[in-house]
Length: 577
Ligand SMILES: Nc1ncnc2c1ncn2[C@@H]1O[C@H](COP(=O)(O)OP(=O)(O)OP(=O)(O)O)[C@@H](O)[C@H]1O
Ligand SMILES: [Mg+2]
Image (cartoon, rainbow, N blue to C red; front, side):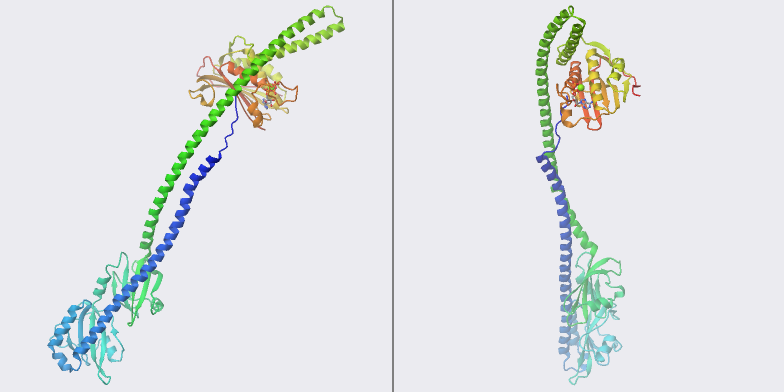
């Protein structure tokens, strides 16, 4: 017997499902937001760090140049009031210059240059022949009126072969005439050494306002060692300039740059970082965050899923129990109804026997007219006896000895009977297995069951249709295969009609004794319950499946006596015009 159980998901189950979904969705959204925010924060922090670094670099350069400035002032005081001849001869001046040179790491030489361009004294060993620098750019520039410190471009020293640039100032007589030059040679390598620890991938340069690089690390920052004009023009007087993208002339990497001018000198410093390095750091942080979030949310999600699974299992158990309880209840009702029916039928049968006996006796002394009446009464009583038999059959009180029957053969023998139970516009189609279908059943009951099913199908197909009768040998495993059947071999007889079908509430009660949807007097509601009881008594089962508008399938399982393995389908079509 089939009972429809509602399989809708319950409130807690929905909540649990939502929780599991939320455990996966929210962290994902949260992670996206976090990744975006951390990207913004990383770029902001990088900007700040770049500004901080370029400011430090500028301060460093500023200190070095201020030191040069002080050194020049100091040397100027040392030679104040001395004639150029005295300066050239002074060994103590030479010693002092040497001392100063040694003390200051950025300094590669200190030179006192006479107005004619000869080096009068210096921190370097005194050469045999005096050196003349009157053709040097710094000398020419200062002699011709350059004001303030003159910073030359980088060149290779003729004396030492090392790279250097000049930081020089002009001397003036009291009346303002040109009176030679004091020149410091600065070593770019000193700056490069200072920049060495600036960080992975970072690049630093010290350059003149005309773009010429004086010092850099690790490589020249600009192509041709010259900063482009638009960059130079863009650097404000006081503030650092931040640039979002500086393509490197050497490896064409996308770099972020910060540039700042050095106060009081025609110089600026530059500091750049590859964008890839910054983004790699950001990505590392994001991957770490993502992993932690994923672990957290998967743990919670998994726990939720376990809870959901447990809950569903429990619900299945509850449904099974409810199902079993409903079936027991139904069985009890059937039992009670059976007893009641049997009782009524039994007493009624006795009464009918008395009535028909008396009518029989009355018949002898009747006129023709009277005989007709008596015959009508006898026909009615015999119909009543038929009904009683049906009731007793349903109640299982009229069991005959079951006999060995070939289900296929029996069905074929019923063919004519079946055809007559159907209207001519219904096609009867047999699809019978060729395997053995030997069963032990009450043949009459089986016939009645087939007739009951066929009659129902005829009612369901007022405008014609098709009734297919299938047999198949099926094995039921220890699990029962979802059916309430003992494991073993069964003949499965399916009656498939293409009728109107049943709505769920009718389907749920179709096997119930006395349940009918026909008008009063139209049906007893015992048809399908007879089918069910027959199958049960035979040691099998009857099921019904139906969909409104699609038709109905009534299936009877009957235990088989001995099945042979081989065989195919037999196809027989009967009836219908
Ligand atoms: N093949 C079918 N198609 C559609 N509905 C069906 C079909 N078989 C049964 N039903 C429905 O199930 C109800 C019960 O069927 P059942 O055979 O037990 O009683 P009945 O046909 O109403 O009466 P009876 O068989 O005693 O004349 C029917 O009234 C009908 O609503
Ligand atoms: Mg019926």
